[in-house]
Length: 605
Ligand code: M6R
Image (spheres, rainbow, N blue to C red):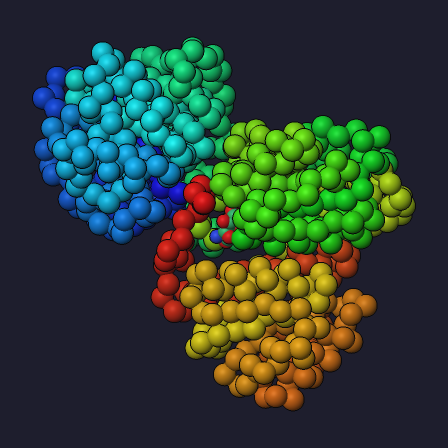
């Protein structure tokens, strides 16, 4: 949520920062700003604009030279999107500029105190409080000014600070919101996400919570907020700069949907052990003996990751016969959960940054639980906090709505379920059956993607709906939940998901010709039950679009998907519905990659 980018070196900084902001725009896009300076400049120059990075770019004057700067793209928390509330925030003298991700919980108290001392606030943001604290601090060094000011703050932050009296450095700090340093040749970068850095350097240092850094053009040092030096070993970012580009597609969402055959191939690669009909998951840090003692598995995630967790729980129950369920992490953390030593907790997150998930993990660890992470972003906060886990290897996902990460996360759960199953009671032949099914997935996904033109036609026909119903049974229900979330996120069409079995307990009252239903109808032991639900809808003149393994007589339209093993079918059934949401949103002229009111990583409560 929100993006930070900064640079110090010899190059003209404004174009660099604007390019970095473009790459981070998916993290927040309601306003943006940039501040620059240089060793010989007299002070800081700042431009801010409500709207997108392109609106900021249009405002940057021709003469805006500088070789050091920080910039920000915002997703509003305190104060509406406006020029004034956009970051950076400066003090009255224009000496200090701050960009900040996160939330300062005690901002109102600090604002009241500073106001009583005569400070005039120009914005409604919590961040401006920090700017004034730093500007009023009389320590000799910028590091000390920032350090002492952060001590007064409660809450989360990733911050970057520029000071006119110290133009040779940028000071940054992290607590709960990511900060990454990028090491170049006589130049240094800082960002909240490697996406902003990789076109310049792949050598990075990720700060830990409670860590600060001073970056200069040819040097950097890291230390804690208590002032103790820390050692920071640079690592190499796994992905090339091109992985963050649109690669010839019109939108990131389309690119990411199309990448799924390769992405699934990646999550499987090197993990299958044909000899023992199982998989090798080295990062779990859970040996066979420990795995056998697990009595229950609880999966925690938010949004799409929660839906992937629901399918994961089903896979674990059916393949490993361990009771498993999934719960939104955002709920779990607030209900003082009973933490059971025999339960294995699994935190799921694409970004590895989602605050609700991270907070749930921290609470669980504090209570002595064992927590695994199923995460996409390598080295992210949740991945580091967990006792072990699996990366889903989907590659960078830029579109705000998650597609390939959902699919890869479910495949990762299938691997975990197989692994646990083979340690417990899953037979060799069932292990082989699942492995063969997993191996078929990339090609079958490709087959579904080839039906895009047909799905687009259907989307055009259903795009006039004001509301849509999604139904599925057992394995199909989380698919319905996820498909309904996809549709509402990017098309803004209201959508509800229900277990098909629940229709007659209430939602059937909604059925009429104007409310289409999307039904998940796999060819499994529940086929007849699902068909009965279609009958009930048809009897009330409802329109039906079925996703099934064979044409459905009662449906107005059927998207036929290839059949895999019943346990793995949800993976394939979700894919045409990603395309349905995509083409519905496209035909309604929506901003697909940047849906209104949302941002990619929700790093606030
Ligand atoms: O990064 P995470 O997987 O933890 O994110 C969780 C949700 O915020 C995320 O899945 C959200 O629901 C997406 N917009 C779904 O498309």
